[in-house]
Image 1 (tube, rainbow, N blue to C red):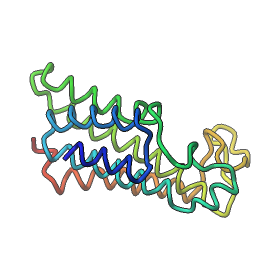
Image 2 (cartoon, rainbow, N blue to C red; image 1 turned 90 degrees about the vertical axis):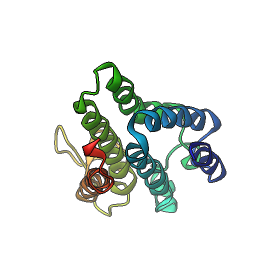
Image 3 (cartoon, rainbow, N blue to C red; image 1 turned 30 degrees about the horizontal axis):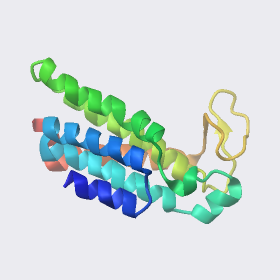
Length: 173
């Protein structure tokens, strides 16, 4: 199934070949250590996160906030979003099955998903974002800026990972 997910990412032009290869490798580790329940969280992040890049592409292009390479994720994106969750999976057996690492996996994935959702959806807000450190109005796409729509998108994404974990029984592993 992981190879099919990788093929879909390439076919849908959601990631380049290197990003997809790293994502497939991370996916194998995630599946091996978290079984289908943890892998379901991974699929939720990859599928919906990739889809969010396509939402409002014309407006994002006009604002100059569209993901580089026409929305395709690069190896840096995949590493930044999935290295910590994958590390949690690798450390799980080393810790003799400490369940805190499974919770950390879900939390790291929720944080990555929240970041993706907030930046992809928040940039579509008609209002200007505020810089979180100074509350100064800044242009869309500014690092460290937020707006209400982006915050709501982040909360929904993180809650989605949490609810998916509950629905699959992931937290009972």
